[in-house]
Image (cartoon, rainbow, N blue to C red; front, side, top):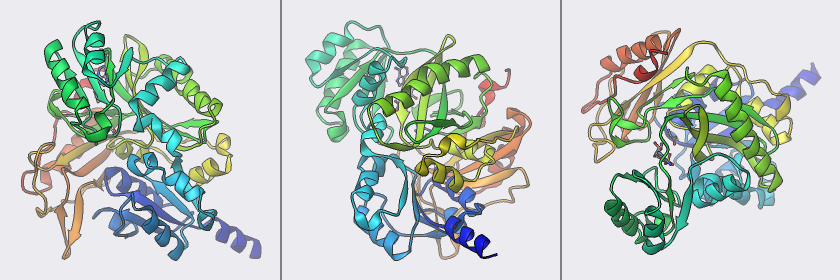
Length: 435
Ligand code: AMP
Ligand code: GLY
């Protein structure tokens, strides 16, 4: 018995999860069922995470405040949800502080997070490792940019180099408009993030998202997903953070998977390893299928949102075990186990999103039933009520034997949830139904 006790003590962990969206509620939901999780704190969290652990009022980029909290609460593991703390170097900051030496942080170093934090870095990395991606030019003046734009056919793709809260990519049909938009970007439309712009060849095809967990040497592939980024049905209107997602993706056949792994995943991880970039976290590959050939649209240094809301519910694995393997260098022994059911998520948003929207409206939930799950995004608790607190309010994830069945289940719940201005797309997954 003493042995069992010692083992239990060793395995139980106090966890601090950084972030407060649908992705983080999905992490928290899994962590709340994790036999290795002792106490769970979420900073800042939302009304959903409050049911999984304790929300803490901390900013995800206030590293000294995070350190103080970690030490005061004997936190063993910090899991970083969003990109910003990673790009700002939270992993390096913890590693450099001897008082935090025992704390495991799940996420790449600042050097690794550059895959997302600088589009120019990502493009150069892909060029160094022969990873398929669109032709491009990195520019800092309108003249250089115009000269390159003139060599391309429309539409024209302009990307702010740095983080721009998902808004830094512009796609324009007309050369003159593209030139004008480029000038506005270089003049600081997205602050310093767009003082450097990556201009890319436009790729035509269907997009999908692939995720790996990597320790920078070996990797494990998680279930793939397809995200629906445009606000309107039929993929129309403005880009959003994501209006829904499904997993698995039927057009990602074994043949396409092989190309993804051989041409993209393996060379990316081998590239990180060869360049001695410390990377212990997720890589999110935003891919496009161009006539049967996968190409990289973007890298992210974190999980996707709302993709996590369909990827994690399909994984049987507990997270802490995987993260421990990641940190201790034993990831190669891990086996990702997936349920065969389809998962679909439908995102309920506040009216007006992704433009101006209201906050603070009362949300009335309905019973979700055995095949559906609420994953909160922009919600918070006040005086015992749950109110809206962001543009993307609530994801409803459902399981089914088919995409159609899973989406239908989410829509049935979505129809019954009430809040002022509620909006959602009814056509999530519809483009995949014929397959
Ligand atoms: P990103 O922020 O890099 O994911 O870009 C936002 C969206 O712009 C992507 O999801 C694509 O739909 C689109 N996009 C980005 N780069 C390209 C490209 N080279 N060709 C076609 N579409 C692109
Ligand atoms: N859903 C896209 C993203 O997380 O960036």
